[in-house]
Amino acid sequence: MIHQYKNNGYNIVLDVNSGSVHVVDDCVYDIVPVLEPIIKAGLTGETAIEAACMACEKLPYSSSDIKEVVEELMQLYEEGRLYAPDEYEDYVMDFKKRKTVVKALCLHIAHDCNLACKYCFAGEGEYHGDRALMSLEVGKKALDFLIANSGNRINLEVDFFGGEPTLNFDVVKGIVEYGRSLEEPNNKKFRFTLTTNGILLNDDMLEFINKEMSNIVLSIDGRKEVNDMMRPMRGGQGSYDTIVPKYLKVAESRDQMNYYVRGTYTRNNLDFSEDVKHLADLGFEQISVEPVVAKPEDDYALREEDLPKLFE
Ligand code: SF4
Image (tube, rainbow, N blue to C red; front, side, top):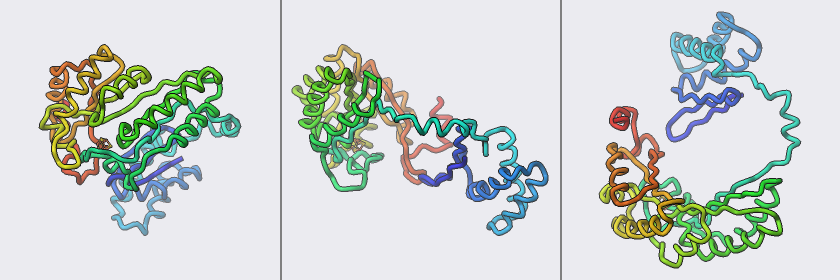
């Protein structure tokens, strides 16, 4: 089974049965679906190549390009990385009869944010929609849903995510309280986590978080200039000075465990190891940094030519 789509300027071909993901150019992208019925019809070798080339005649590519692509696709087919057979075909009806078991929820507790990070996948918290906060009623229904669909699983996970969850902290507290009330009667155990940008974090919140949250993720990109370039407040000023003292307090209050500072690196800090070192020098012991997800045309997007520097 082939699933193909375009995303962020990339042509992606997913061969579901083998699990292979191919990032391809337009010509390959257009020929993949033309070749599929030919393969399914059982044609192989030169016969398949000839049939595919004929079927592709109307595509806006030269016959030599088409032939070259068809040969490459046939090669992938022979290697089992494209048009792979569905090994589960005979069992799928049994799978469909099984009840779905849900073990974790990521609650979009605040469809809003108080930062204006330049790489924000959430459109600065709004996900390109209207700003809104989850109600306690919806949060409770989410936990009811989780319990009702969790089968025999005892341990269930709920992540408070956004946008920025601390903008809706009363509802976070209400949902946790409701979750705890459900544990004993249902023989379940909730593991709550929260991801925050730290701006609104205060001592009261920290006390609650330390009592109730198994983990907390603290967003920061590293050195002040790096962080403030990509993670400014809505008014344009940097967030580093506000969050660092709070994050240090979180780390110490949790004995340097069950938290982590999480950074995103971009084309602006290809030397991101310096940011990791900076975070370690500040006193953080749990650090995670990840590459930015961006459109190729974004000036901070990582490019193939950056790889040597990144590997360094
Ligand atoms: S803190 Fe998160 S949700 Fe808010 S703007 Fe930054 S990346 Fe987006």
